Length: 260
Image (cartoon, rainbow, N blue to C red; front, side, top):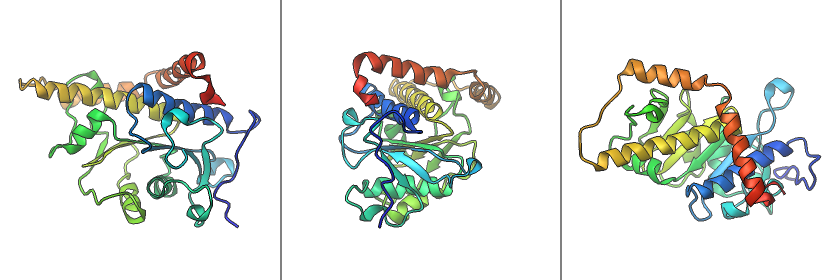
């Protein structure tokens, strides 16, 4: 019998409840940011870790083709990236989401969280022949030498494509992938970290694309300054945690059902 859907908590006694609430909040906030795309795109978060006796392969992810506005803490799926029978169950996830996120959580140990979006400005960047993000301001400098660019889009992310994409995450320093002709994948050690990184990457790409539209010369930061900004930002105390907390406080007032 398949064990792909391991648990559907209905109370706050679930040991992963806070992670569920954080991840559900990310979906709701993605709608606020206009990052959603119909019933497409997926976020996932590993709930166990090899260092704590778990296999590091069980992860939360949104259900197959439900709008981000309807994602709640309790309706997130709990899957095992090493379960060969996941797609055989009655509550199977989207096959492309399973192929992509399952492969990432099987093969990329530093990807505890994976956020896949077709957000507007990052996808514009992914559509350019040169998909690099130059350091033209503080936000874009945050990502200096920290982005993987996938130049070989091969269609919808079914099994082979999912494995191929996951294989590109080889450098733990590079936690954003510009998926050429597709969108972005942002990974992180925690939900707060990945969400914060996603927010600033979309902001940075918005600035860059808008700057290109002016058709005026750009003011580029030196590699030395850009690297300093990226290094300092990675060590900025508590920003991701506070950002996540503020998102949830906002949703507690306006969409409290995210935590149901």
